[in-house]
Length: 134
Image (cartoon, helix red, strand yellow):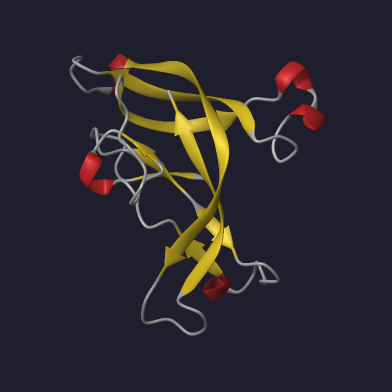
């Protein structure tokens, strides 16, 4: 997961890089980017099938939370896990000084296809992605 788009606007969001199964992490063409934001407030930038946020603008700089500090209860051991991210409350002027930390939930989502064009190797990759909830 990474923060995408400029953090200075409400188009800020979270997107994902995925290494295909058996891929070499040092080889650039073995990576796939999500086809849009997986967690964001600007609907036109959202990946197909993912909804824009309802209560915050420009979520970014997230972290996955280890429940009770125990890695065995956290990703990838379970399907649902807590997250923290910062954003601006909807209806509030978008600025860094108005960013606050929020908690949410993420879940593993199966059968997510990422597509790319004009590259060597396969142009699609099917696997798990993440869905975020406020």
